[in-house]
Image (cartoon, rainbow, N blue to C red; front, side, top):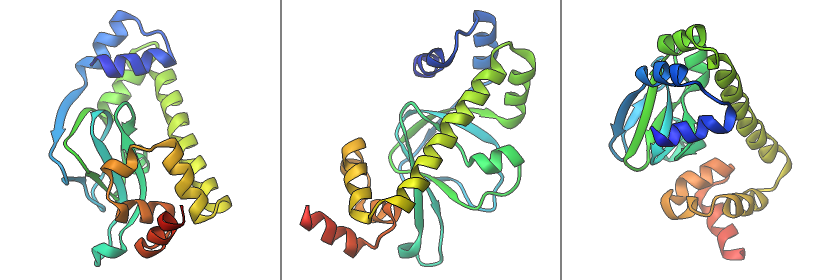
Length: 189
């Protein structure tokens, strides 16, 4: 709980009463390594804060080699199939724990209760949604404006730990190249 408190304290000052109500709604989950904990066509019922671990967001394909990885989330970040969560409609993608992952999760309905019954809930919800939007927007801009090599170098510079913990086949999909093309990029560098 300390990590999510520190994260939220960066956003706003939360009263003890609001904090107690919010934390009463959180549920701890430990997801084993390589577990898909949300499948496409399922409705996302939770938004979660990652206390430890790494989560991959990807579009599944019949051929696992053709899966499209489009996001990763790490310790001290929120994770959700957020579009499915907001609309309560089926997700178009999977969420998979790449390592054992510890989550603090809140259901859609419990979050609505936090919004309605606390003074700070709406502000935290809005600011968290804004941060998720900025991450998505930055990724889209990188895909449109940078070469594959530039995307790899930027990823390596911003998140060097990625290369130690995430298989290269997922990284190649994330930057939008084949595994062979990533291998050539890595040789050039």
